[in-house]
Length: 205
Image (tube, rainbow, N blue to C red):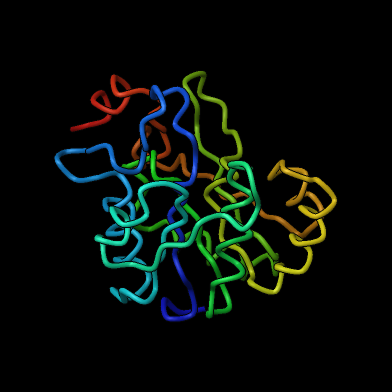
């Protein structure tokens, strides 16, 4: 696997309910919109190719398009959650692998792709998923941070057409490896997500 075989997808298609209905991807982190921050961090990992990144968004599409990357809304109706973003990404991806990140975890690591790719290949898995420490110190899967084989599209189509909406219920159907991000030197807040503006400010260095 090389950087050129991976497309990065920023998930910014939610309602932002816990942020008062604000479009979360357009809120700023250190002065940069969250979705743009995520795009830039992904682009550094996918060979600095603008064609190697895209955004899943359902509102304010012109604002997202101004970031310079392709923008694709959900193909499932009704703000169906992150799995709808996965589906859209897999449908639009023209590389063998798709790397997904949410827009609201602005400090995700710059070696995310490298470590997920190593685990995917070592375990000959279909999906590599982050496991990150939470406030109680326990490692828990973070299923919105996934490296996926694009040939999983048909499986996800079947799952969503049958009404499935939970990421872990779908990934459990496939060979999935979880990758711990609790090594010495890892940022303990790398996968912290901001559900409110106060939480977002708290994540700024």
